[in-house]
Length: 209
Image (cartoon, rainbow, N blue to C red; front, side, top):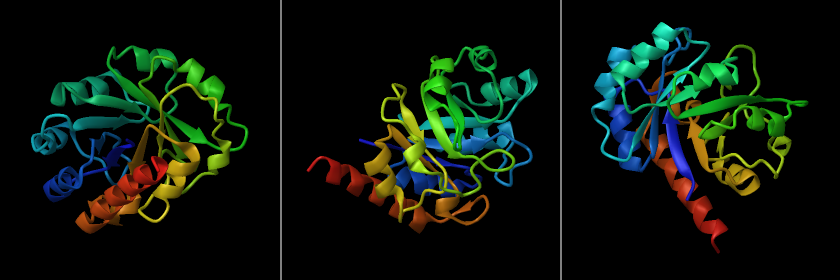
């Protein structure tokens, strides 16, 4: 079963919609330059809505120790997502389970990248654009070698319209969506969230036939 992460949530209604649709993880952005950014205090309030077995994920970009600790204090059970230029030692120092984002572009050696971050719970694949984050862009999925041993989280421009193709081609452990379920940056659509989750489950069913 492909896990589903809905990222960049800022409102109670969107968290509730993601839970109802069957999301496995909810992402909170702790990067002040993002239009989807929330404070640790706001994330803590939103995370109170999460039932057991739905994981809060905190996205950080080149964060300071103080910023990391503030996020971890607000959400002690948070899975950390490193989405900047962090080295393996930077990620390992939090001594918490983490995801490491890889910005996919021609020439990126994903095998070497994954080996460098061998302590990561999974490698999140995102499009390479200016700044940090995929910007709603899909990268060339053929750049993903089939021999990657790490768990992969497919991200970057996913929506209900293309996620089934991404699952069929990449066979990721999880998928991560943000802009593909939005009506504007940081504002999700309950209908789009449900359509996305339904598309993932249909794709999983097709693979088992």
